[in-house]
Length: 307
Image (tube, rainbow, N blue to C red):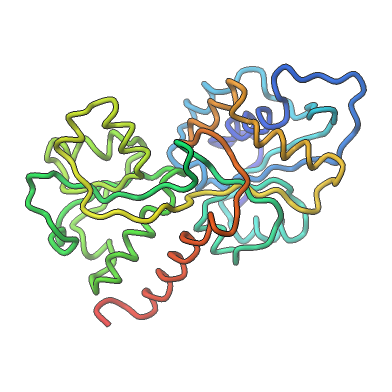
């Protein structure tokens, strides 16, 4: 299914387009006409962003005619929850700028689409995932969580968290999360994951290092009560891809606008919704640990638990 018009998050997609395409303070007297730029966002990459948050982030940015550092172009946005349909659109060159989760990128066969952009936070590309418990709960191993409850943050910035936990369970010969835990509760705010564990209402939570550090910074007592039981290597949770076939003359300007998205207040607002501070050019090394984890998870699923 492909959403058109004003589905949830469509206004956020429009804000991203505007922030990318209209750098503040940039003007041109003689803009050149560039090829149309079609932006595609998967609904999964916007997980955890409410419509009210999106609408609060946009003001007058409703039109898609924009000026990109000397280029005039028509930009439009589409949100997909049908991943195969998006894959076909990418292959046929019908979308030029794509935001999707790393899991979805893997499901599409990790296509060599063009330039890759990844999020950066605290000067680091990739985020560790933490499985967090109370220090006084006596839980010292993953196996000790059998039959316990877990709270998982479902946001684009946490997209690889469940994949990592599932792989960890299978590597230790344990059942998949749905059978191993008594419940896995999804929430859309970091505090809603950590505080129920802090207050003893749930046994564990799943957060990225960046999300947990932010909570501890705001409430240091959380850091004294809660502790990671297990942690992943840094993982890349979502990607932005720019088609290599897009207008060769205007393409460098679009890349430059994306890399400088953080320099504008509106751009900072967009990035903060996804728990990132800026976009940087991604390399094969940036994606390696995440793609390796996804491949390992799939092989473990085929093998089955306890084999």
